[in-house]
Image 1 (cartoon, rainbow, N blue to C red):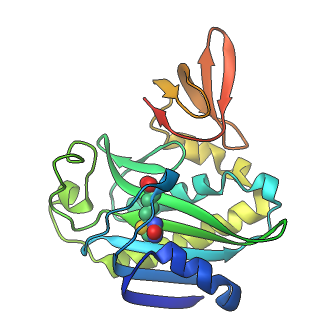
Image 2: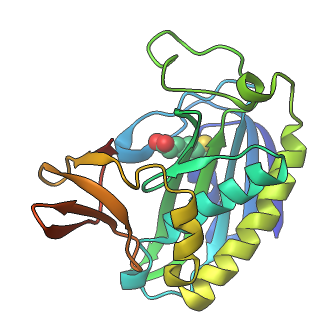
Length: 234
Ligand code: BTN
């Protein structure tokens, strides 16, 4: 694995996408980002103290089976936090929660060559040593410092995360999401809750889990509704 440790970068995801074709498998960390990217076109505020890391992996999955890779990444983050005795849940598809607040966001992007997707870039932002959050996100965001009451070593977390990522990505590329569906379900925050999915159109139902293809499964009026993409509240 090519390793990049940067003081500052616009976005570790952008950086990893640029480097993947020349380096192949890589890991890029930064102390801070000036243009951190979030899901659905949002910005990821990235002050010093937290972990900002992107991994690039060679992709061997056909594009039509690739969508649930973000769920595998979420599982790798949960595995990592468990290594530090911090139990966390996953809010589908890939937000990591502790005590009802978001501690980590994941953004998976792809490097495309025509129809092919030779590389996958998985960007992970974990709130590590940030003590306070701006008022507008205070009731939704949490850091490891907030839950453990102590500073954590970002390098140690990053290293553990690399091990767990390598393991989950190998499992995903070999066997697909179906092989880890049950473990994902054990961390699922939404199961049993009433959930509203708003993209592409609004649907409401009780969450009964996740399918083998990574869809969120809702049940409403005796019908099963798979949710493939987007944002859900519940
Ligand atoms: C989200 O929840 O919206 C996803 C946030 C992903 C943030 C991480 S930080 C490291 C990597 N580089 C980026 O620009 N974004 C991801």
